[in-house]
Image 1 (tube, one colour):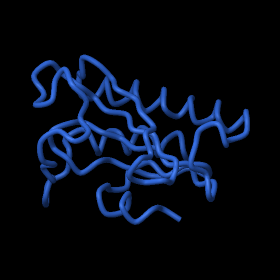
Image 2 (cartoon, rainbow, N blue to C red):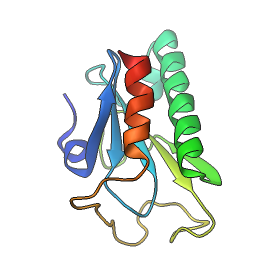
Image 3 (cartoon, one colour):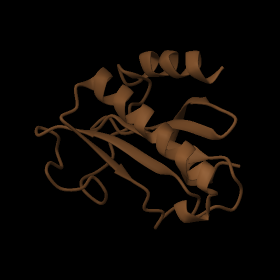
Length: 134
């Protein structure tokens, strides 16, 4: 089950047997969140060796695709879990002209939801993952 905060702050990209793929509803950054479906996992090291490598592969795939689609200069990857205990990995596209550069995105400024719009890169990302996730 997806944690309620992740459910509220993100939208669905798609899912695989192992992961929910979500996008952060904040127009300031291209931002994907990968959530393993294993129940009661809080930390990466709690995953089996195989699951750790599978998650790393998914992080790399999301990072490459998001950077390709958005032209981000730098990709930030993090699994903090201080506010949401369910293991989830953030993949965030950063650019030198973003409002938090060069600092971290967490705790900086105010989230700017997309409202009725969706990120311009979302449809292409969904398409790329649906072809591989089916």
